[in-house]
Image (cartoon, rainbow, N blue to C red):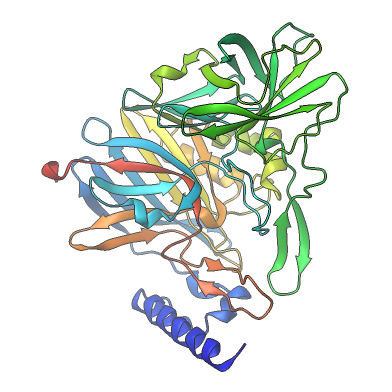
Length: 433
């Protein structure tokens, strides 16, 4: 690293150290946080603050035994006084940037594809179902729970990966590629997408590991009877951008892929308009937005997570592994978002196991089968408004941006957090505050 670059790095690190110390986190060296994150293993001060009428944020420490603990941050929303919506973007955003105008808080959203290879990324990084501005941008590959926003109200439903769509005005049924497929049925289509990828891990001397996928194998299965149609999102809706006789379509090239079998319908051509009309029994026209959810706390504790594991890499649902987690629950007309915080490079503050998570839900009076995982790990974060100040955050304050080159430094990004592809946004009109 040349001298001016080193000086700039030193200044940025000094500013980061000062910002952390102002929060009571005693860090001496930002670069050392890539090996030791013990300064973040601090029990939070219990607190409760009202962000807007009907919107509250609480903080508390939960002891896990043997000196281990997590800090639980819970955002509770009265849905008669404030609104929740699901937002997503393939370009991504930082959580704090969403908290402006009528938005009083935001939390990390659904699971998305994460890789350390910037050169090979999916066109639509959300995994399985995503509806944005009443437009389907991803279809599910397997039955999963989902958060649906219908007429401004959130619903959680387990959705079968089935439905209907039209191509060039012709109606087709569809089902997810991880579902048991019906016998060859005229006009039936099979959905593939980024959720079919397999994340791999490789050793790295500086960061410990790198995540990516192998582009050569990141394709739909070869089948001489198949015709794969890559569907992309355009300003005028969804359209077929490419066709692949015999399969082998790149899973990342479009929003999703539709597979037909012989005899191939003649209207499956490049440029044909695709209109998704239903998912399970829900008409898309009735949904403003939607995101697939992870397993319930009960399902994760029981080990029923096969549908999530491959596309997430090292599964966060392994029985003994402690991870930070983001949890969503809807009950009694209240929406609840909870971050169970942790930093991986500590001995006592790594988050919770799936069993501990289910137990904590039950202890809080929640049915673990009705509490669902959102994107966790170093993505677990809540941003919230502060009167006449910049938005603040809780969760994953240890987050470092990995170096892009061999001689670049680690960067502390605990306030901005990871670049997100989806989030849950809480809004309340200013006149009610």
